[in-house]
Amino acid sequence: MRESLGCGHVLGHDAQPEGDAWMQTDQPIIRIRNLDKYYDAFQALKNINLDVHQGERIVICGPSGSGKSTLIRCINRLEEHSAGQVFVDGVELSDETRDIRAVRQEVGMVFQQFNLFPHLTVLENLTIGPIRVRKMSRPDAEAKARLYLDRVHIPEQADKYPAQLSGGQQQRVAIARSLCMEPRVMLFDEPTSALDPEMINEVLDVMVELAESGMTMICVTHEMGFARKVADRMVFMEKGEIIEVAPPAQFFTNPASARCRMFLDQILEH
Image 1 (tube, rainbow, N blue to C red):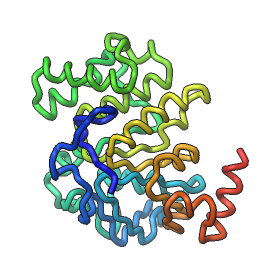
Image 2 (tube, rainbow, N blue to C red):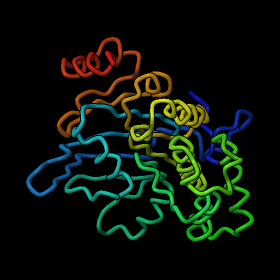
Image 3 (cartoon, one colour):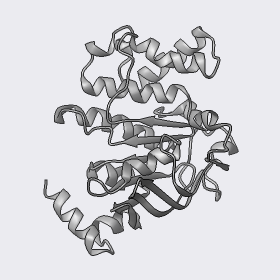
Image 4 (cartoon, rainbow, N blue to C red):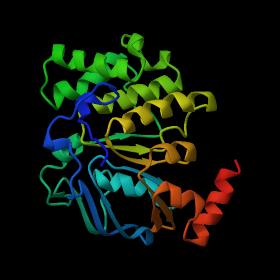
C-alpha cells in the first residue's frame, strides 16, 4: 500500500504520516452512484458509478464534450446532478445538504482559468480563504501561504499581482491557494489547457509532486505523459458515460474498448 500523507505535508520530501486519518482505507472518500445530469433535454452524464479512495490518483480523459468537467464539478456541487447520488467523505450532496460549504472546504479545485482576484496580491489571494472561511489569524494564514508558495516553487512572487505573473506562475498560485484550505481532495479541470506549451511542464511538475505526497486527486487532462506517471486508475469517458476504467499499464497498452483504442491512437500521435 502506498503511504498517504496529510495536506499539511504536500510537496514535502521529508513528510511523515499524520495518523490514521490520512491512511488509505476501504471506505471511499468519494462515492458516485447512478449519476445523471441533464441540461434541459440534453443528457450530459449517464449512469455514472465511481469510487475514489483516499490517497488515490484518478485521471479522467476522453474527447471534448464527453462530460469530464461536468462530472468533477458535480463532486463539489458546482453543478447540481439530476439523479443519483454523490457522497464526499460520507456526506451526500443534495438540495437538502446544509453543509455544502463545509464539503467544499474539503474539496479543492483548480480550473482551466486561474480565477485569481486581480486587485489582490498573490499573498492576499492565498490568505483570503483561510481568514474568512477557516477563521485563521492573518499571521497564521500568511505563514501557511508562504509555505505553499515555497512548495509550488514561487516564494518570490508573494507581493506581486496576478497580471505581473506568467500563466504558469498564475496556475501555480491557484494550486497553492487551494492547498491553503488544506482540502482532503483536489480536483483539476484541465489545468494546463490555457497555458502556452513552454509553461505546461512547470505546472505538471508541481502536480506530480503533489501526487507523490499522497494527496487524493482527480484530474481531467489530455496530458498522457502525466497520466502515465501519476495515475492509479484511468477513466475514459465518451458521450456522458464511463466507457473504461483501468490501471495505466493496461489502459495504455491493452485498452478493452475499441473506442478507447481509437482515442489513444489519435491523442498519442500528437
